[in-house]
Image (tube, rainbow, N blue to C red; front, side, top):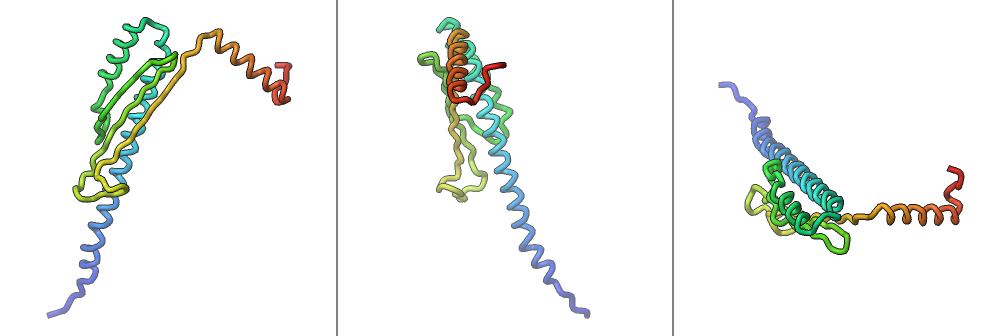
Length: 155
């Protein structure tokens, strides 16, 4: 009987699971980044909406905020879970804050921090300016730039 070398089969049996594991790990990190970006985009949109609606009635604004936070489409997140959402208006500054987490699928793997849960906090804050205040700030900026010689006065 003829003898066959099986070293290639043994090496493939050792290397293949590692390659597949690395590929799945990279895909999971990309899902985490995708969901994090969506979460920050949603918070930014809510904060921008709140800063534009800050001139309305307080009760109407609170109802609108609760409606926006409640209507946040959570099914678009692939593997993410939103743990908290908060929006507030204080002294003409509208802020939106939130936290979310992603559980690592393999129990016992505590990568980067001793926990199998990766969490992210995001916060956005916008200030609503009246048109008069905005024009005054633009004039102050223009005057400051002209004093420093960085802006030509002939535009």
